[in-house]
Each structure stands twice: as C-alpha cells, then as structure tokens.
Image 1 (cartoon, rainbow, N blue to C red):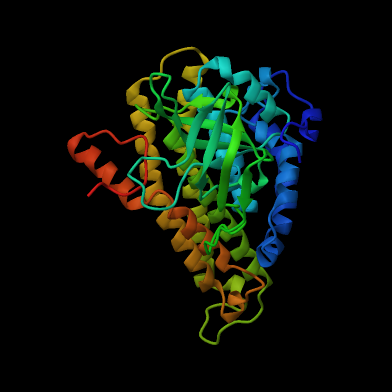
Image 2 (cartoon, helix red, strand yellow):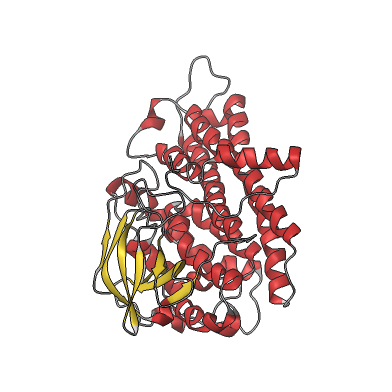
Length: 420
C-alpha cells in the first residue's frame, strides 16, 4: 500500500467539538469486539493482524490524539489510555503495534516545533500509520547509533539495521533514529529522527521477531540501504532534559498490561461458567458455586481494577502536561519529574500484579485449562514480554533513590556497551 495514498479513515466524520469518553467508547467498542473475536485464532495461526490494523485505521483510531483542527478526534490523554486498555483487552499485540505511531504524534506535541506539525498530523488523520526503527543489536558504545544519515547533494542517504522495529510491518511511514553526518555544518554528528516511507527503495522489513510473547507485534528487523531522504523528513531528536515522552511510551506498555489483566478476568469467568466437573474435595456443587473459585475470580477482578486505576493515575499527569501545553503555558520541571515517577511506580506494581494474575488463572480449573487451542498461556507470555521492556528493577531503584536522596529520574534511556 502506498505510503501517500489517502485511506478510508479520511471519510470518517470528524467532530467540530471534542468527543466525550462515552462517545469514543461507543465509536470503537464494536471494533474492539471484532478484534477480540479473532485474537485467539490469530495467535494459534501466528497470522499477522493486518486486517485488525486496517479496521483501526479506517475507524480513525490512529488519529485519536490528533487535534480536531488537523482532522483528528482530539482525545485527551486520559481518554486515549482508557481506549488503549480496552484495545489491549481485545488483543494485546495491537496497542504495542501502534505504540510508535502514537509516540510519534506525542513527540510532535512535546519536542518538535509547530512548523513541522501540520503535515504529519494530516497524514495521521488520513489513516497513515507510523512505525518504529530505533534500537540496534550488537555491542556498540552506550547511546551510540550505527545507522547513519549522510549528505548527498540536496538530499540525504540513510544506511543501517534496526531490530525491535515494533509495528513496522503494518506501517506506512517509519520513524528511524539515526546519527546525522555532515562535515559542512555545525553539529555535524547529531541524533535525528528520519521519517521514511515504508515502501521506499532500499527499505526491507523482515518478520523475524522470535520472542515467546507479543508474537504478532511485528517487532523484528528493518534494513535501510542507501535510502534517499528528503530534508523535510528529518526532524530534530536531541533527547536531552526532562520530557513527558519516556512516561508516555512506558504507559502504553502499562495500559497494555492492564488490558491483559482484564482479558485474564474475562477468560477466567468464561472458563468457570462453562465448567461442570468438580473435585471430590471441592466446596461447591459446580465450579461457579465453589467459594475458593469465587475468591480466585475476585482476586483476578481486583487486579484488573487496580491496574486500570493505576494507569489512569499516570494518564492524569500526562493530561495535566497536555493541557498546559495546549494553553501555551510552560510545563514545570516538577510536574515532569512527578509524572516520570508515577510511571516508574506504576511499572513496578503492574508488571508483578499482572504476571501473578496470569499464573493464578490456571487455578480456576484442571488440565483442561492447559489446552493449546485455548491459549490461556498467551496472557502470561504476553505480560512477561511487555514487563521485560525497560527492565523494572531499574525503575524500582530510581523510585527508591528519589525517595531517599531526592535524585531526579533519568528521562532518556539508551542501550549499548560501556567503554572498557
């Protein structure tokens, strides 16, 4: 599909005023239901979710955070994350697929001058999906990038390999982190974000993600070989100073985990309600009448509630930042620190809580809960995979260091090998 072709989403009616949360839920609930109905089959077949992404594209879901003036739906961060939790409940691959897309839109708000906004917002409003090509494999120096952008006359050339390119198989444009090399300019070696049409000559997308969870998130390799780049598609990416972006990106994972907690509750209830066999040493005439099973379902429901509430607490902080920015007011560093710490505390809690629920799920029944065609194990595998991103042990340390010593968190994270 061409990266510049308008999509059916462009024909979706746009509001003149902001949607209420109820209106947004009513708009997307039927799509989430349809996505959920096929999630198990996609998992069993390892069938990439092109159709489901298409439904979201055509409904305008990718334009949730785009301003109404730019053709989007104008959802607040609170509304956005509530919907993301619901999407994660339907299929946890899909919020992760769209993480880079929504992250790019937020980056325009937070870190890119307004002169560059309209073009990209309009593309998102027309149904374009933005993917990700940031992380590299190997043992490069900590924080360095092997992907290079070099001057070639009046344009640029991009070369490099990326992994964990989440969502890029589904994308129309790819946001590529690169090191810009240009000896003719001051700042000749700086980090930039390069926007590349996914169908451009020299781009290769490979479905080689082999993690045991989130198997349909298209998180594999993307290669760039002498790709011609228009200078208008190169955006600054200084990655210095306090920012809401790290909290935003991680909260997408947390919302997905909260969605998994709700899916665990849903599937546990359905499993128990349909079950007739009991154990001789059980405490009820049917599993649904057994007080111990009822207690377990209550624990799963409590985790789903608590994780959802925790994500909302972080989303409220991101909403406060968004409203200040929209009003043309500066965002206090203290608020950025507070939201980053909220996110870190939420990550420490939510990962463990959802993994515990995913294990407890199997206590609602016997060996029949282990059937491969039921794929109840996918909830644990998916939660474990999400919880492994941006390791939680470091978040707990950051929270503790701030509590004990008043040390502010680090806002940008990098990977690589320390110099010996």
